[in-house]
Every structure is written in structure tokens, then in C-alpha cells.
Length: 448
Image (cartoon, rainbow, N blue to C red; front, side):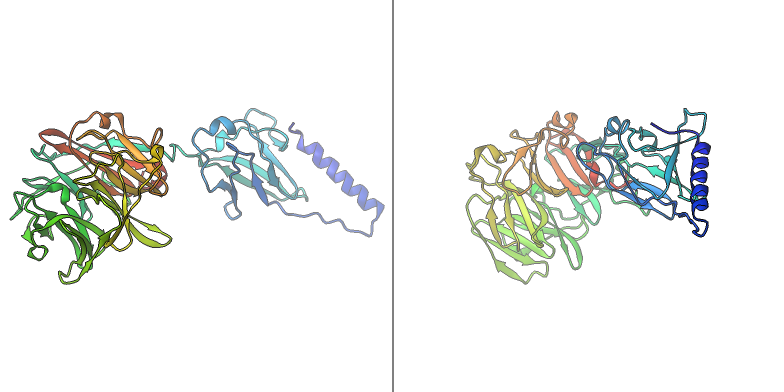
């Protein structure tokens, strides 16, 4: 219960001081002028305590970790179980015409007025001397969106990429999103501006080719980052390699020969080359070459997607793809720490592996591994997740594809440019669509 009529309380305090003074007139009683909050805390929210910070300069009390979405149904009637001061606290109840009331920690409080509100809730801290008073503002931060949810947007796209007849492959190149088709390339800006704002749509620019191979395997396209910038590489159906430094002008790389099946841009300056007989790595200087090997069988040689991450502070790369003679029922990731030696992450537990997908795409995103794909060709309808790259489960909630995406029948390619995931549909004459997704907890307030 809140105690009203502060004047009466103050008078009792004055009388008690006067009596003490009369009993021993030689002693001077000096009460503290401390009117600060020393500690603050509320009861648990979904079983968790949230730490509150007290800014004594601005006299603000706030939580650093935002409360989860939906917590307003809990804090509408919650206890402030810690409110440590030297004197006493008053608050103003808007429904009370008599003014401020003494705050009682035994009463539950409705804190919704303090949620995501710059005005917050006001509390007055009175020092024991009855004179010094400081006003504090309580501000409670709460997520407006579920931080673990994956949100998708269909991007509006002026100068839309025409539906390619044979297929397409999207890659990041020179801080732009490029979509390569057999006839031309299309690029759009996707980096934030000086105000940390990302483009809200896609403004495509067409790039004509010079000497682009007419037998290029678009799915083999990779971007290699090096000391001298980025470079594009692609494999042809004749098992030769072409490269480009600008996306438009292409030249054959004779140093690779005519036995190349696939390429992996595994690490900066390191290109993994898979041939019919072996694997080796080469640097962009065209000279350095180091033999490699597989620790297992059915190494991917088609439609390879890679993702980089760190394990025990050691850079690693993980890939998935299609093997020409793979009879396994699993999509098996392969990992390497140097681009030369590769190890499969096989799983013998039938209920915790990623099933064999037609065109799997792997990514390390938000501190988890994900594989996108479908058992059907030219479909995208499922996401599998793992914390270790070995045990996989299909996502059932929150981290999901938009239902409209799962209804599209078309070739697709996926690019991760954190915090965004880009999915580009198009090929085989199908209508193009560009989707952009993000995990809420990876988005800063500025980006949103």
C-alpha cells in the first residue's frame, strides 16, 4: 500500500528529531543528504533477471539487454524487488489527485509506461535530511520484434533482371550484388550509405560481356579476394577456366589447363582447384601451387557453395554441393583449414543429418550453420540448422522461408552479406524475384 500525506510524515520526522535533541542537547544530529539510487532491479521476466544500469549523471535507470517481445504482459503487474536508497522514494500516480505517494516495494507496479518511451516513469528519491531530492527516470527497453525470427522482404527492382533462358548465379563482387546470366551481368548496390542505411530496393545496371565463354557453367562462378582486390573465376563445360577483374571483360586462364571440374574460393588469395584426378590450391599470382587431398569419397564437384567461419580461433571453410557419383542419402558438408586438405562431416545418426538436397546452399550466419534447399530440383522450401556442422535439424519456427518463396519453381542462388541474406530466383525462362532476409537480432537500430 502507498502511504499518502507526506506533510504528516515529515512532521513526525521533525518531532522525533526535536525529541532526540532535547534528550541530549550536547549532541548534534546531522542527517544524510544522499538522494541517489544505489541499486535497482525487477522480478524475473520469463524466469530471467535483467540487469539495470544507473546513470547518475543523467539520473536514468535502464536495462542494457532488452526484454523479450511480449514481456508487456508480465511487467504490467510486476515487483520492483530492488530499489536501494538512503532515504525514501515517492512516485506520482496519474490517477491520484493528491500528488506524490510513498513507493512501497511490496506492491506490484505497472511498468508499461516506461517501455520504449523517452519520457519513461519518474521517481523522486528523498534524502534522509528531508531536504535534498533527486528525480530519476526509469526507461525499459523491449524488443519490438522477435530477435530470433528471420524476416523476408520481396525487393522492388527497377530495370529488373530479365528471366534468363538457361540459369543464373549471384555473387558478391566489389561490394555489389552481381547476377550473371549467359547473355549479360546485372549489378546493384547493397552496401549501407554514410548514414548506415541500406538500399530499400534494387536499382540494376546491365553490364555487357567481352569474351565471356559461351559454354560457361554459371554455377561454378566464384569470387576470390586477394591483395590486389577481387577477381571472378568460372569453369566451362570444356573444363577450362576464365577470369575477370571487372565482371565484364573475360580472359581464358591457360595455366589451369583443360581438366578443371570446379573451383572454391576457400580463403583470401587461395583458390582450390578440383580436377578429374586430384585437388590443389593456387594463389592468384599464378605461380604458387600446393597439392591437396580428400579424407573420404564423394567430394562435391558441382554447384558448390562455401562459407567461412572460425573454430578455436582457426579460420575454416565449409562447403556443400553435388557429387557426380554420390549415392548417399545425406547432404554432407566438407571442411578445411587451408583449402588443400578436406574432411567430410559425416553423420551416422539417421535422425539428425541433413537429407540429400538437389541444390544445397550452406552459410554460417548468426553463430549457426544453415543449409538451404529442397529435395526437388529448382525448389527452395526448407532450411536445416546446426551448431556444430554435424548434427542437423529442420527449422520449424522463427528461422523460416517466406511461404511465397516456397511456392516458386525456378533455379535460385543465394548470397550472404550480413546482416542480409539475398535469394535470387530466375532461369529456365521463369519470372525473376529477389528476396532479402535478415535475422532480427543482427540488425542494429540504425540499419532498421
